[in-house]
Image (cartoon, one colour):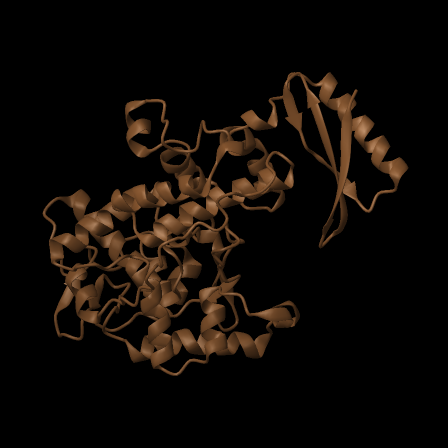
Length: 413
């Protein structure tokens, strides 16, 4: 049984590598760092014994991206990352197979699903990037897909399924940062849409309420659609929205957000109880909401306005009325840099700053997104009064706690 143990210097110390051939297959695993001669020999013997007695395992030269996915999802769970929707969609539709092959149920040979990892070259990565750009994907989309691919390859390296990540230094397109925000007149166009179909009218009414929440609290689209009535808590200074942890480490979410009158009215309309259930139950899938948003903007003539731009609108308006950067950062759920965040735990004075910010926002932009629980709202700074619900006030069954609180904060039309 011939084998070779070689040594090399690394930042972690002296690395000991095994070179061993078995049944025509070459193995070069890492034995460990800073080992004694006896330890290196024992590790080599144990590893060789394992290789010879686990012939069912696929040789490293044949391991593909699909073979590493179980390890990737296990690491996903250990990191407590909840949202698998985006990485799963990226993998299934683009990285493992192209969208056309997925749609036609073909075996895709020009993506990474069936290609052995050991055969990957930087040219393969560059070819993928160019193909996605030619398909119309934006630079930001390509970079997000690339992050998923590189995480899987790094997992493969970490668990010794691959010697190194060959796609680590592939050039990526530069993503342009969006600066688009919604203007009051654009939101007014949406509020003035007329619908003859009762079902479409209900959709438009609920969309308008969602817009109120977006520009009042700055949450992302997905989190707004997830809002449950039990998240709304009453405190001495008013209502707060207490949110669960973010589904992704990248997308930060504030732990709690104070609700100004506009947000509370939008969340409170047609809510019989604050005890259970989602507020916006109509939208069971985020993609359906995206399509409805795009169709609505197209109908009213609004160009290039993403729903996420309402989050930019919220932040920009806070900046315009002089809210401190640290407060804006907290309301948006962005993490403070360095160790400061680990030692900052808020308090009554901090809560007052947060509430002052959202209430100041409402005072500075009172007519651009006003909403009244009494079925009417003044929009866009005009004298026109718009009937959002099509019913007279007071006919809905309300929770007594909600009714008493809302009766004192109804916005005049």
